[in-house]
Image (cartoon, rainbow, N blue to C red; front, side, top):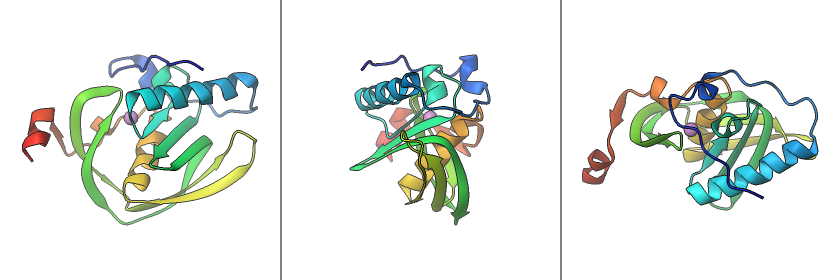
Amino acid sequence: MAILNILKEGDEALRKKCREVEEITPRILRLLDDMHDTLEKAQGVGLAAPQVGVLRRIVIVEIDDKKYEMINPVIIDKKGKQEEIEACLSVPNKYGSVVRPTWAKVRAMNRNGEIYEVEGEGLMARCFCHELDHLDGILYIDKAKEMYDPEDIEEA
Ligand code: NI
């Protein structure tokens, strides 16, 4: 278990399209464990492998007691529109309002190689979309309608 370095905006790894995982190796399992440690330390709700410099289609999402490991995840259905403030561990001290679906369904593989589907609403749907975008080199700042500094948020 280890805390990994989270890459920041400007690092070209964050702009690459990630490759699918073909086989779940001990290295992939270790990466998942390290991503959990890293996300916990950073107190975030989601982390994608390219944020720690690994260009593979892997995402973890942890909101309250719901924790998902998603290997080769795909959004297979979505509904609605919500505009809320979003942030990213790779873009520190910034916030932006982004339109996302209110509900999304993801199909992914777990660490045992089993395919599963999960639905999320509200923050969970937002997080699925934000993290999956990372796998295609997309940051939320590309989609943000407005950007804010932390002091703007505190006043709101
Ligand atoms: Ni992010």
